[in-house]
Amino acid sequence: MKTGILPETASMRAPGNQSKRSSLAGFIGSALEYYDMYIYASASALVFARVFFADAGATGLLYSLGLYGVAYLARPLGGFIAGHLGDRFGRRNIMILTLLVMGVATFLIGCLPSYDTVGILAPIMLVALRLCQGLSVGGELAGATSLTLEHAPEKHRSLYTSWAVNGIWVGYILATLAFIGVAALPDDQLLAWGWRVPFWLSAVLLVVGLIIRSTVRDTEAFTIEKESGTTAKVPLGEVLRHQPWDVVRLIFASFLLVISTTVPVYGLTYATNVVGIDADVMLWAVIMGYVVALITQPLMASLADKIGRKPVLIGGNLLGAVAVWLFFWAVGEANIPMIFIGVLLTVSIALAATNAVYPSYFAELFNVRYRVTGMAVGLQLGLVLTGFSPVIIQAISTANGDAWWPAAAYTTLACVISAIAIGTGRETYKTPLDELGVQQR
Image (tube, rainbow, N blue to C red):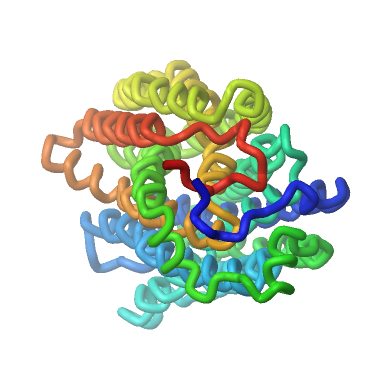
């Protein structure tokens, strides 16, 4: 039964060039956003404890990882702001805004003075810019996914929206390559200026992304609502009134992304700081995993267009819940070949399956009137746990003699919760565009 919300119509699908442009815009934008996020993650694991927390001693690493999670506190607010603006004033405009905020904040991080230079002011400025990064990324994927979904061909919605998350892997690869280069520098050069170079390089991606996003127009689905004056005045209020349980479901389903921080971020930290594995070995293992994922993600998205979103999402979660034990055991034993196999299983297959499909599934749960808001708020609230995963695991591991098992157990629990949440939801892959988000009784 319809809720009285104005639905989309089949005629709202955009010409093919716009569907391709929106996919490309999402791809480039995500590459920048997550290049920026991951160079921060790499820097927090490798150098920030010494640059910004020089007087903290052994707890400097804990502070550094904790600051990595600060952005995740800002992401729900960023999701709310971006959702409100995107549902009221257009998906394209919010995509440009989030890209600009992220690019400027990241470049400025590379310009910050160290703790030795300005004292406590250095980490304070770092926190402020990290919060700006969180605000930006909080609305990025929901805006890009909504735009692409509403432009995409009916039978290929998952494939088209998956290119935004493929951009995430490209961003990770570029960030990891950048840090492999600077990590080889002598310590004094690395701490003085080397770590800054990857942050400055983000300006190149920013310019390219802004040029591409300026060529994309808003979807007819949104344009018709705007011209008819029926856009939601308070999108968050409407989504909570009409689809509150889908927001709750999405929060728990978002736990599927915990593996994206526990394996490459905490795995890097544990391997280099506890086990003593060379950083470049771990970085190359992560790069290998991301490169293979560039192939497996479109395949998983196409599979979801054929057999449904839920089987692929649940299967990826369950595989990740098991494979993560192999990965962390291999790290704890410094077994390099098994580390690479563990990354393939956890990142290139398990995470690739969930990562490729969740954007389309999450966006398809909501109506056009509040699609960006519903996806952004639910996703970002769920990702708060993801952001603080490294510091939570670090604390548990330290209390248990630097054991590796807390990381595996934590990730398994998150994957199982996500699989259950997705299992309680409805399937959307055969639902026509004009019926998405319409509740049934």
